[in-house]
Length: 115
Figure (cartoon, one colour):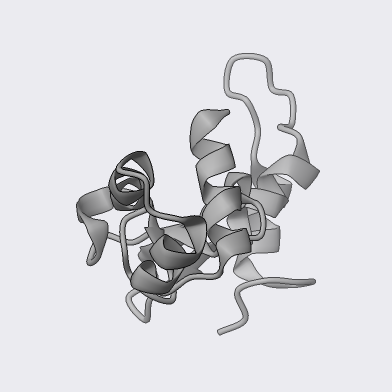
């Protein structure tokens, strides 16, 4: 089933989103952007959400990894776990290698945590 684009179920949901009390439509562009960050399973339930605030770092929420905490999608390592070695004095290069991410992804993820 088509999950995004013209005529998709997501488009129909966005078109129909109305604030119940006022009858006003929500900001369609904003809602549409976030709906694109959700991956749905065959059962039509959300199975993963990409977190755009982490910049270029490929960070997601996945109920099967990280106990609901943000994880690097490729490696499955929790973002918060990368803080410990950095605080202990490890280099970005070493921590990025150990956690299966690039240094740029690690820096973007940590910038998002600090914001």
